[in-house]
Image 1 (cartoon, rainbow, N blue to C red):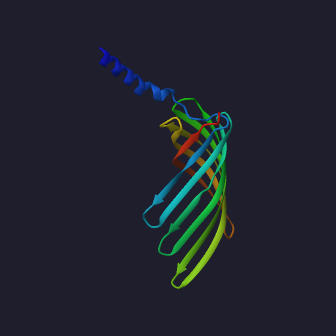
Image 2 (spheres, rainbow, N blue to C red):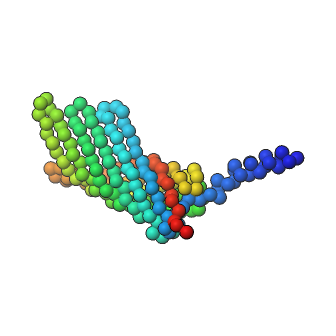
Amino acid sequence: MVKQNYTYLFLYIGLFLPLTCFGQTEKGSKLLGGSGSIQFYDPFMINLFPDVGFFVADHLALGSGIPVSFSTDSRTDYVSLGLSPFARYYLGQSTLRYFLATEVGYRHTWNTFTFGQDKLQQSYNTWDIRGGVGAVYFITEQIGLEALLSYGTFRTYVSGETIRNRLNLTVGFQIYLPAKQ
């Protein structure tokens, strides 16, 4: 009989405790994390997007990401570095929360093109603005896996202005650090 009670206790903890946990999205909390990708085929590419944010009000985080990209193939090397301030508003109190996000970004890019013995260097700026909706699943009270579906406009200035609109799906993680008591 006692063994059966322990079974029910562990079953209850395993099924219902995750539903009562919630992430730290209260005023004064911080978030730290980001996303990244790596591409092994031609061209080889690494994209990193670390970010940090602060909850200035309950469920409202302001922060910035630092997008870093590197790409190379047989004729081109590409490096990009930027700054992308963001705002997020979180909805709900469960282990699965949704959020609304907006971001404005700036990136500076350096390219080196190789043509035989000749090298051509070029640099340019890109501005973007995007908004979207995301979901974060808290695997613990302070660690969340997230996905963000966003739509944005990108403006690149090389030898004139190029405008592109893109739909993006970003997957990453965040660590939610609680406010000091």
